[in-house]
Length: 53
Ligand SMILES: [Zn+2]
Ligand SMILES: [Zn+2]
Image (cartoon, rainbow, N blue to C red; front, side, top):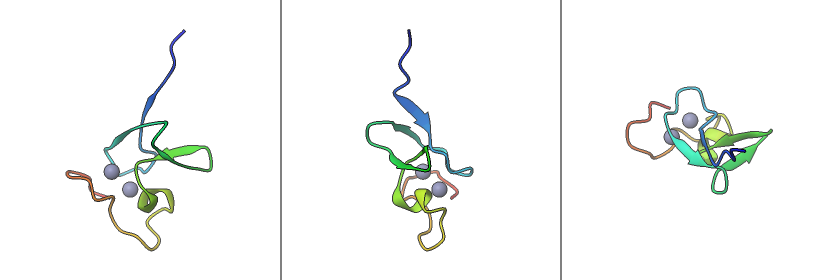
């Protein structure tokens, strides 16, 4: 049995891989940051290098 501990951020344009324990969870999806979790309505980017979101 494999336990998944890391997932790609659910933000489409984001390239981050986040560990589920540390991810920001929203609507059963995992995001690397608050900005991604809120769909970039008020916050831009995720402050991670190389992400285009
Ligand atoms: Zn990111
Ligand atoms: Zn994002």
